[in-house]
Image (cartoon, rainbow, N blue to C red; front, side):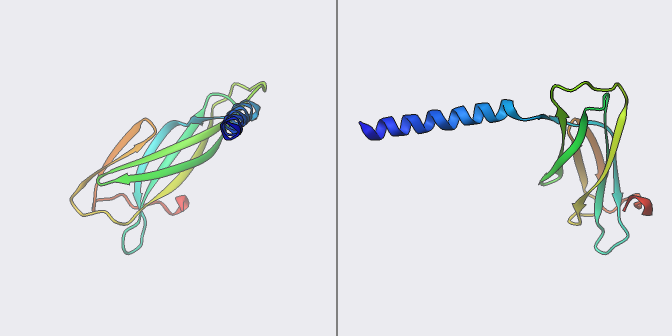
Length: 137
């Protein structure tokens, strides 16, 4: 009986701390609004592939945070997240942030690949490439 009560109290405390922790955060995490996606290849051997991402926001309360890259065969998912301030007055200005994200070098020549960055999809053929401009590196 005592063990049940202790376990129930522990569960209640953990859930309460999670709820309070979520609402006490000064930021909210959202997927970034993607404006531009380009696939580039670096001057290296083996060829290194990169995705150039330009994310933007319609106010001054967002800032870039993290990105995650997942690959499943021919499909590469890139999730770009932003932090938004809570409870602050925001200026109405278009702001943009650019990131160059490394995709790796394991791409078979002639095979079609799909890169999905949040809600924007771009395709490329392995072995065919636009060389990456030096100012992006």
